[in-house]
Length: 128
Image (cartoon, rainbow, N blue to C red; front, side):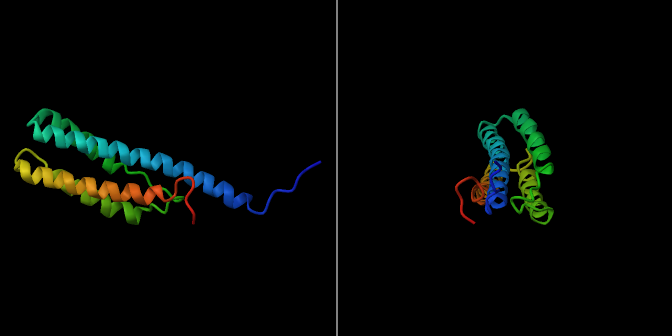
């Protein structure tokens, strides 16, 4: 009447939870990356007010970076990355040249790309 729970059920459930969390985490990183690209466009177009609004939104997102035990994304890992992103974001202020601002945005995009790659490892279909 009742079937036995397979031995690998816990591992399967854990992988599924981790995969779902990785999807959400990747979506968050994608949102931050999209905002960073919009900031890059605003800097190139010399739209200072738009850039200021985007910097504020980016700052809020970076300061509220999610932590995930399933993905091994701990405070110890997030804090330095967030500080680095915030530092790069500060380099995009209007008092800085466009070249420096664009270099800072490019470096931030590299960091986000690497974070996305690391999180993709945990998405469905990855092997431990």
